[in-house]
Length: 412
Image (cartoon, rainbow, N blue to C red; front, side, top):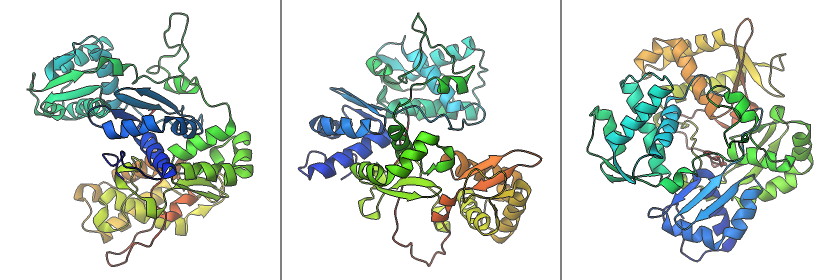
């Protein structure tokens, strides 16, 4: 049963609920005209879905032509990405600009309004290829959420550099309110008490979080590839130890998933027999064969094997039990050895090993949360025990049957 059809068929109710719960948790937005069958199914099972989603800290908002799932705030232990996210900046500039625009508008009007907003906050507008790509990515996110609708043309036409490209858009103003996160502290005038642009860490820390430790842990299990015990507070650790094997496993089944619980942490994984690519989470770990991964992801898989085999365990800087690490200089040197063996790797990356190392870090650290980098005299790379799930296979070796992807949320 895919995310784009089949929801009107009569199926086992329990199976229907977990299919819908997984869809809502991983997509977050269903819009009329595109997801009508799924929206109708959500309304039929809204009672059970509200209960399941509330158990992972989510709120379900239902309108005739819109279903929106609000995810809980990330845990306080969550690490913020370094630097500005260009697609995110242009996304929010566009959201602010759309409020004053008419219901039908040309793409050129949207871009002009967003660039005016950028000038007001003294953000340089270069119209470089990278900036246009970030701008187009933000527009695509708004189209995916049904806030913008492409009546004629596509927003990616922006990349051609035309001042007023032949693209006509429809603005769904009522959906703009659903873009904003909930549970943000406000002052007496209804303004956010902390400006996320000036203090992003303070803004995140001020968001409302579930008071119940079990809900917080289950929210992490539903959103993250793996929940590491070293990131939990005492109440959360106690819940995971005492009630995780029963309550956590039962809730996992409500999403059609299974609980894996070990000393170093836990994860909700997707049994192979229930795997449906279009309903799984946004993150895909690198393919296990060379043909399924590019240079960076293939290098990440090979580095997992090497760090697991040669890394120091139980060092003073290790984030938790079972983590293994090596200094960054060793990582760069090892990538150089691997680059010499794999002539098919990207030539530019093979010639710039520090850049390749940072690209590998970008896969293993923020995306998969399998790597932690600690500072000091020299950075150390620490690999999570959960990384042992992935290994590199030869082109001839069959992929063994095992648990598949992890259920993940996509936004607040």
